[in-house]
Length: 153
Image 1 (cartoon, rainbow, N blue to C red):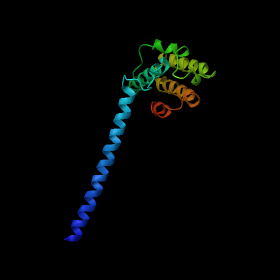
Image 2: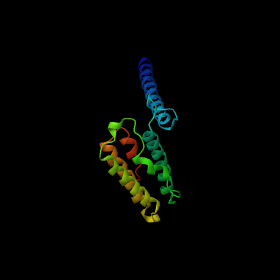
Image 3: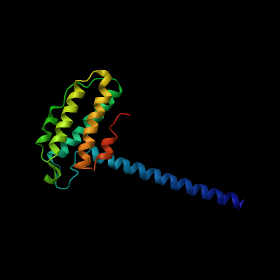
Image 4: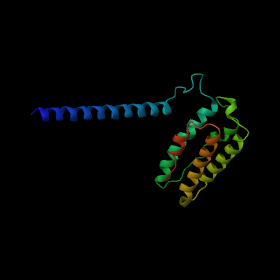
């Protein structure tokens, strides 16, 4: 009886630890999701025009991804993204000389996506995301993991 009672407590301990770890992971994911979708500034000094635009680009890409996976064409080109060249960054040092080339590449790929025939939607969408990855590899690598998750497999 003592052996089975010990075994019971060992199993119960493992279950409690597992539940605790799952809860912590879910709590962390929830906090991260709230941080990405919150209207509160992420930067203690306020969010820059470029940072806000890039968050809108992520939200737009998430919506586009779902539309394209359903085989639907995107409808209205997001004109506000054309301001990427002039949007003020949080830190002026992050906008290196190569930024404009990356920004132009992003806009060209995005325009191509919105003119795509249905059979080219996934390819052209992934080219937009690839343009984002290329730029962020050099300029601001923090959001790369999030950006790469936008790719359609």
